[in-house]
Image 1 (cartoon, rainbow, N blue to C red):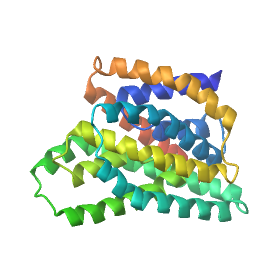
Image 2 (image 1 turned 90 degrees about the horizontal axis):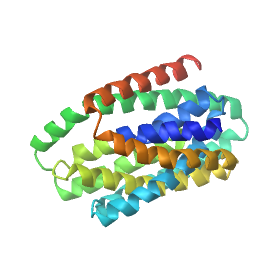
Image 3 (image 1 turned 180 degrees about the vertical axis):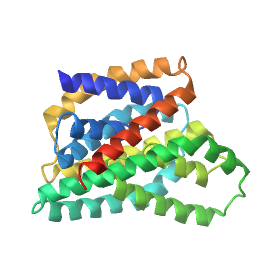
Length: 257
């Protein structure tokens, strides 16, 4: 019951703010429910892949996905995710407790970067629109490198596919409509979180009962949050989210140093 309510709460915040559930769900599972970090990350990755699949169909129908960018991101992210999963598998079997602490510290750092990305996102959008266009070849290479970074960060912490991915795409593709940036980021997040989640599942780091109970609450939560989005001041939402993410990050880092 508590997991379902938590899923609803996180789903509501995701619908309200547009920030990926990994930034909120994994810390909640670790801090409030004392779920081991490795298990929380693995479960949240599969949770993210399933919830965001619905978004892909909606964005594809509205032509809000640039599949060329998705392909380039995947060239980097999928191999990076597989390698990271392999390393986690080799190291985690022997050092589960140490690995859990390391993940929590990295998760905290990723949350701080996510908060910074959210804070500066409006400025980044305005600056990116004025920036000179870079060549197609450089864009492709940089997009693949971005994919590698996201593959590593997301597989290790379950954070980054949302706010970090969108922010970096805004810098790389300033001429692209914001709706298309978001749709492209979601389309890339689905295969990435699925591959990363299956990697965690291969070493037993997924709680399937927890996954189902979270989904039962999150789906109606996302719907309600999206409905409320237009009625609440955007700057207020942004401020609350930044404070929340930094507070969680400091708690995660502080309790493991």
